[in-house]
Length: 387
Image (cartoon, rainbow, N blue to C red; front, top):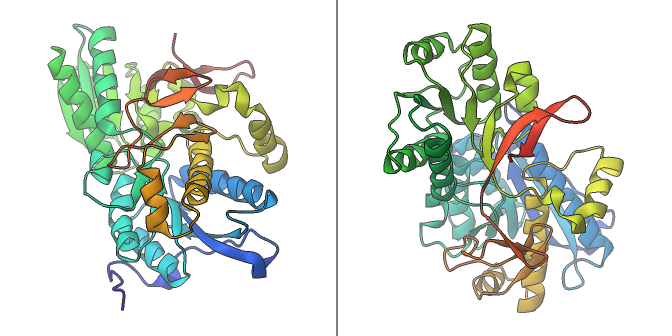
C-alpha cells in the first residue's frame, strides 16, 4: 500500500475540485493544479488556474492526449505547506497523475514528496528556490528560473545602478523570500557593494512602522524586497506615507498588477526581476486575446508558464506513447525540445530549464530580465521591461 504523508489538515479542507470537461466518461488523464486560490496571494493562484484551465480546454478540443481527454482537479494550498500536503494527498485519492504547481517554493517541496511517493509527475510554473530541483527526485520539473539565477542578476544590477549607494535588504522569512534576498545579497557583495540593513519580517505582517523606521535610520537609497506582492505593496505604501522616498526592488513575487493597486502611486519606479514576458511574443497573440476576450483575464506573470506546463505534459506523453508519469519524465529529461508559449525549451537532468534558456523564434532569451513599474498608455501602473 502506498503511504500518504500525514502532515497537514484534513483532506476536506482542500478548497475544491474543478471538473473542466463536459464528457466525464471520456476523461482519462487526471491532472491537478495546486496553488493559493484564496488568501493574500490568491492573484498568483488565479494565474496558475487560468493558465492550466485554458491549456486543458485547448488540448481537449484537439482530442486530448493520446486520444484521451483531460480531467482537471483544483486544489487550494493557501500558500501554506501543510495545506499543500493536504492538497497533494487529495490529488492522490482522486487518482491524479500529473500536477501543475505549486506556486510557493515552501509549499512545492513537501507536496512534491507526496507526489513522488505516489508515482505522480509535477511541473511547477513558479517555485524558484534552488532546492526544488536539487533533491535528486525523478518527478519534479519547473519551467521558471531559479533564485540563484535571479538573485545573481538582481545583485549585479543593484551593484551597477546603485554603486556607492546605501541598500537595505528585507525579506519575509519564507523559503522563497529569504532565499532570493540571500542570493541577491551574495551577488551584491561579490560585486563590492555591502548592504546597510538586512532585516526579516513576517509574511503576514500588515504594520511595517518599525521596519520603516530602521530603513530611515539606515538612510537607504534602495530597498530590496524578498517576498510577495501583498506585503511588498504595503511596505511601499507605508514608506511613502512616512516620507521614505527610496525605490523598492523586488523579484518575481511581486509580478501581478495587484502590487500597484496595494502600493498606490508610490509604486511607480519600482524595479523588478522576472523571466521574459511571453505576452511580448507575436506568436502568442491569438492565445493572449483569447484570455482577454473570453476569460476576461490578463495573462500576466505565471499564467502562460502554467499553460506551457500542460503543453509539455502532452508533448512528452505523445513522444513516450505512454501516460505513465515515469515514462513521461524520462522523455522530459532526454533532451527533447518542447515547443511552448514560452518558446522552445528543454530540461536538464535535474528538471531545470537548460542553459539554452528559452528560444523564441530562433533567438535565445535570458532567464531573467529587469522590469520597471510605470504608467502605461491607459494611465495604470504596471511593469514594462526596463530600458
